Each structure stands twice: as C-alpha cells, then as structure tokens.
Length: 219
Image (cartoon, rainbow, N blue to C red; front, side, top):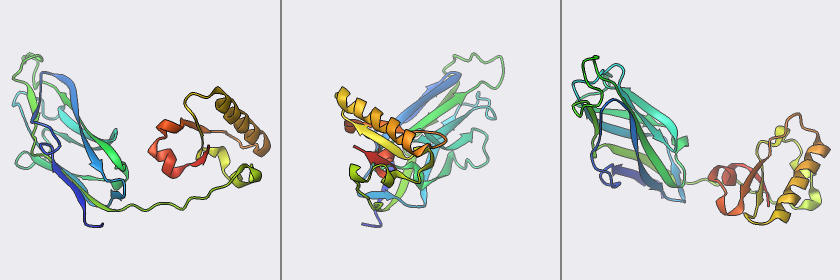
C-alpha cells in the first residue's frame, strides 16, 4: 500500500561505523530491499553522518555515494553543506529496483601536506552507522504486456529502428536454441533492413530486471 517506506539507518542494515585510514581510495557496500510490489516514489534521501581527520586535505578528499552502481551524491570534506557532521543527499527514484539494492560508498583521502605520511592511521574518515536511508514507496505500476506468436513474425516487430529494446531469451544450456535465436536475428535483420542492429540476449535463468520490464522479449 502507499505510505510504506524504506527507512533504515546503516546500523539497521547491518553496518557498523566504517573507518578508512591512510591516503588513497576505499569503499564499502550495504544491501537493502524494496518489496517486489512497490517502487520508489519522489522524495528519497540519504542523510550521511561522517567525521574525518584534521590531517586530510579537505578540498581534495571526499566521499561518493552510489545506488546500484549509479552515483547519486558526493561531498568534499570542506563542503559547506556539511552541518554538524551531516549532509542530506536527494536521490532520484529511478535508481531503485524491486528486490535487492546496493548502497555503495567510495572514498578518497589525501593528506593536507607532503610532510604527512600517507600510510599513517592519523589520516582517516569515518561513515557513521547512524547515517540514514529514506525511500518512500508506492504500489508498483506494471506496463501492459502484449503477447504475440511467430505467425505474425516479423510484422509485430516493425517500427523498432535498431531493435535496441528487443531481447532474445534462451536456455542457459541449449545450443540448438542458441542457433535458432541467431537464425531469427539474422532473418529479422535481413527482412527489415534497420540501419543499425542492436539485439540483446539473456539467459532465461538470469534475466535482468531492466530487460524483463522494459524490453520486447522473444523466448
């Protein structure tokens, strides 16, 4: 129902305070779930709580936040938006998927002068476990599905320049099915003559969510 939300601290998602020490790049991931019958609504936020060493070069050091490998926010350690060691990032609803999602953090630390040993544990950054993810949810809208059979092939696929939204779904261990899919793809390209052909392919037991919900599928 509407009004539900993913509303968890990192601690509630199983993470402790995360500390990185020394100069260079580092990162960590946290998993969370969106119910399969729900989708993200507008207004998602992530409130980041962080502290850092006084030896860090604040203008060159910082943290990037990603959802499902898509960057959604970043902050330098001298960012004026950081108030009382917290900053709120506004997240687009489009980055969230039904089911398992991944919240990732990528840090870069540099010392503020050349006299600081870049390996020292006195150069550090901490993401605190009270950082909070909030994602309002609404009932998931399903796009109407049109089912066609090969009696109307290839007419039901007309009007799709490049076929970038067309995917062949094949069994993971069935060379005959792979050969048939290849034959259909060749035949379709030969009959419709698109300027560029960009078919996609996936195994039936590992069909990506984006293809399942957005592409025209040939099984």
